View 1 (cartoon, rainbow, N blue to C red):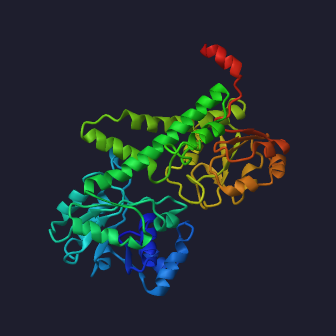
View 2: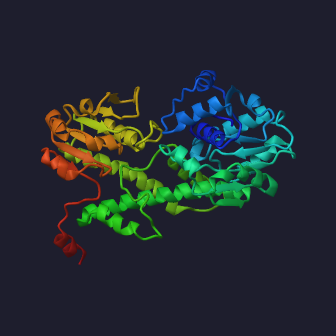
View 3: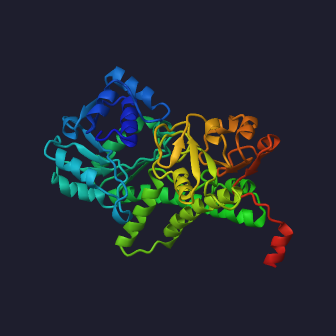
Length: 430
């Protein structure tokens, strides 16, 4: 397992739990020493336990450098970063660097697996860089959600394996046999596209529901009831129908931009996907507009208490967090920000990070809930009402109980629950 980031460490620990012997490599010497001691810095339920179980059983090992990890390996997983590069395309520098390091020491007949999210054609590119006809390259995309990655790995919706060599694809698929999941065996290009197609579809669904939420506000409808009615349709489903401050994280922003680039490279215009990205940008601006309105029409000098900084609950990941995107826009208008997140410690540019929610809201002109941590529902909102300078709570996730806040003397503003007069709307339409 080359790379012990989010994907590599979860994949390695889970494969070890299935009975395989796994050697994980990383270039960070200090990190390798910590992992050898069973110290996992990633906030992910169940991961630390699996790592320590694998170490104790002798099925999981950590080494420095990819070359050391691939000795005697039957399967080599590439789990290195593929960040957004120039123009939105995926940066494959880390993948290419690993190939250069291991190509001459790979055992005869082993299989190289692209686990990182990579553009269509990367398997062919890796194969060309290897210059090893005896080493097939397989695409095996991951579908792990931060906060539920271990559960997702051990209870997958499907396993996707792509290779132009049937035997190599079956060898990789066999690693997951104990999971009993549906398995899609296909060519490498199709497997590579599956991950992008899936993530971009989810991004479209989120952008769509945020647009519907805005329409609800203008028409006086309730987005919670609208999405409930939609979700019972089996063709649509309940998931990814929750409005919010926009989508973010380590995958969706990167993958949507990458697929736009891939499409453009073959002369395909993808207006549906570009509109998805544009809608997401606009949603963050809409959230700021709500907070500005709550603050009396101007943000300069206003104190805003932020509840939540990570891109979603259950993780400490700040990468492309919509909460931080909103914070950046608030700062640009002169707001003073204090924030709290149960999973985030350390500095966040422009935000005074405190160690509890009550410190975050003390003296606030507006409280903005940006990440849907369950503990925010359980706050003593009467105490919050006493601490704030103004009783306004902008709930960008519709996460809180409006009636409970109102009983405490607070004013709750959500998303997609507009005060419009239906008769006035009808008159305007007709």
